[in-house]
Amino acid sequence: MKHECKKYDYIAVIGATATGKTRLAVKIAQLVDGEIISCDSRQVYRGMSIGTGKDINEYTTEQGTIPYHLIDILEPHEDYSVFQFLEDFYERYDEIVARGKIPVLCGGTYMYFTALFLRYPMVKVDGLEEKTAALLKKDHQALIAELRALNPQLHNRTDLVDKYKTAKALVIARESSEFEKINGVVHPPMEINPLIIATQVSKEEYYKRIRLRLAERLRNGLVDEVRALMGSGVPFERLEYFGLEYKYVGRYLLSQLNKNDMIQKLVSAINEYAKKQLTGIAKLERNNTPVNWVPTDDFSAAEKLVLEAGFKRAL
Image (cartoon, rainbow, N blue to C red; front, side):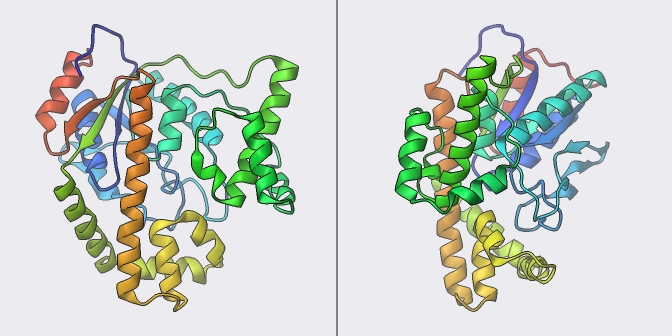
């Protein structure tokens, strides 16, 4: 999709898991003298490097290390929300721009990038976990009914499947509704315009990447990483919450799955997650948010987009 002449404030690299987002974002940041802001709900946690694919080594280039943000900022027991991501993004955005650099968003947490690009109104909720726990005593269907009533245009359908997520979403919906009644506005988002680049691979290549990446993570110590988290006091319920690698490796370590079943279920879960990521991107396009699809290893195509959009090549 070719853009008309518009001013872009920053660059965003999104896409399905295992499609080379970090590598491409680093090259783009190097091209424009940028700094990367992570858009990943699990990379914010310390001690979760292999399973989340932080790939910290990729930020180091021959020209030096590309600065990155919102990685390794929390302990695994701490909570992180869409609201907190938006606050942190805007703060880091201002800091990067003040340094004369270009912000480059990178990641695949679709709830984060859809909230950011579609400018969802958000409100901060104090005592979120305590209020969520209190709602868990109620019937799930009753929670769903109230959530639908408060938020007919529910952005995240997974909120209706998991009772904890339903309760959490309901607390936020209640607080947002009350805040709007009193103040007439909910956390106004910044009016900034991203050049969005989405990494694209064929289905065949994607399935190959998923299996190769998982095999590499297992060789690099994924099981030991999850074992260390459990040994440090992270409960299995928390690993289930993190999902994917942490959920299934945790089950393996608890002897609920053998190694082969762990791998097969994990591959299937990653594929399902990728579908949700692509659904998030499709939602952007349905809402008239321009998305530029670029073959993941074709940096020249990405470079052309960035320069044509008005970003300057670093000296």
